[in-house]
Length: 406
Ligand code: FAD
Image (cartoon, rainbow, N blue to C red; front, side, top):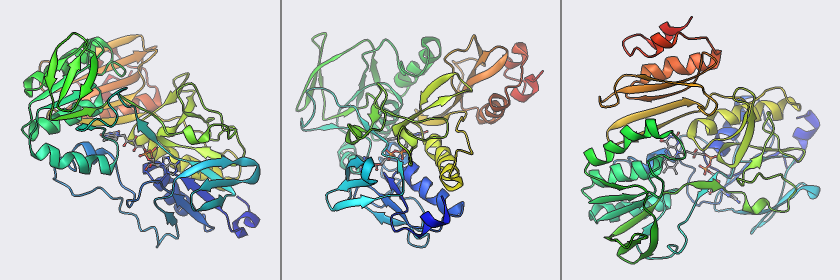
C-alpha cells in the first residue's frame, strides 16, 4: 500500500479473529505496516486456537487456548463480539450492528462453520465442536461420562471419540459412509484406522445413517436405537461466507471465497485466507479448499506481503499439512494425493507406527505418517522439491525417506 493510503483512517480491516485473521494482523505488523489495522471478530472471547478444543480443553487439561498475542502492543484494534453482516464494496464499507466500518484494504478470514444434522438442531444434548463455547458446554457433560454417540467418523469425530473414551464414556460412532475418513483417505488406508476405534473400546458403525435424534436417544435408519446422554455431530464444515451473498465476491459451489494464486478475491482490495477461501494450486493442478491449521498460518504471510507490496508479489501454493491426535496416535499428513499414480506402504499398519506415500510421476505427492514424524518432516521437503524417488527404497521403512532420493 502507498504512503498516502497509510495516512487514511480506515487502513486494513480483517474480518474474522481466528487463526487466519490474527496471523494476518501479526504478519502485517511484522512486515512493516504501521497504519491503522482493525480485526473484527464475531465471538466475544479473546482470539483462540481451535485444535486444543477437541483435545486438552475438552478434557479440562487446559482452561483455554487463547493466542499469546499482544494486540494492544502491536497496535491492532481488536473489536470482539462484532459480527459483520454485509460487504458494500462500492462504498469500501462493511456493515456491523454497531454501524459501518470503512476499509482501504479488506481481508476475509471468517473460517468455517460446522454442518448440522437436519432435524437435530436445538434437540437437548446435541452438540457441535467448533468453538470455545461448544467445548465449554461439552466439558462438564463429558465429566459425567454419559453414553456418547458421535455422528461422523472424520477427524473431529475421531478426536472427540478419543476424549470421550478417556473420560470414561461408552462411545458409539455412527458413520454413513462405508469407512472412516471417507472424504479424506482411500479405503485401503482408512481400513487400519477403523481398528483403532475398536481397540479404544468405541463401537464404530459404518454404512449407518441416523434417522432422527431425540432427547436421550439416536434412532438409526436400520431401525436400531442408541441411548445417548450426549450426541456430538462432526459431519464436516462449510466456509462461513453466507454474509457475502450479493457482495460481488465470487463464491464457489463449496461456498468458499474463490481466491486467486495471490489470495486476492474477485473484488479489488479484498483478499481471503484460511478455512473460508479456496485457491488454485499449480503444484497439484487443482483448486484447493484446505480446512487445516497450517493453511491458516502460512496463507496470512502471503496476503500481508501482497497487500504491502501493492501488487501481487507472492504466490500461495503450499504443500498442505495437518495433524490429528486420535486414539493415542499422532497422525500427520502432507501434500495432496488426488492424482497420484502409486501408493506405497512404509511398514505394517498392524504395527503402532507406519506411513503411506503417494507418488506421482516418480515424485512424492503426499504422505500420511502415523507415529513417524521423521517420515513426515523428510517427506514434506521431498514434496516441496519434487525430487524423483526410488519406489523400492520409499517402501522400506528401515530406510530414511530422504535416502530414497534418486
Ligand atoms: P476459524 O478458526 O473458523 O476462525 C474464523 C473466525 O471468524 C471465527 O472466530 C468466527 O467467529 C469469525 N467469523 C465468522 N464469520 C464472521 C463474521 N461475519 N463477522 C465477524 N467474524 C466472523 N487443524 C489441524 O491441522 N490439526 C488439528 O489437530 C486440528 N484440530 C481442530 C480441532 C477442532 C475442534 C476444530 C474446530 C478445528 C481443528 N483444526 C485442526 C482446524 C483448524 O483449527 C482450522 O483450520 C483453523 O482454525 C482455521 O482458521 P480460520 O481463522 O481460517 O477460521
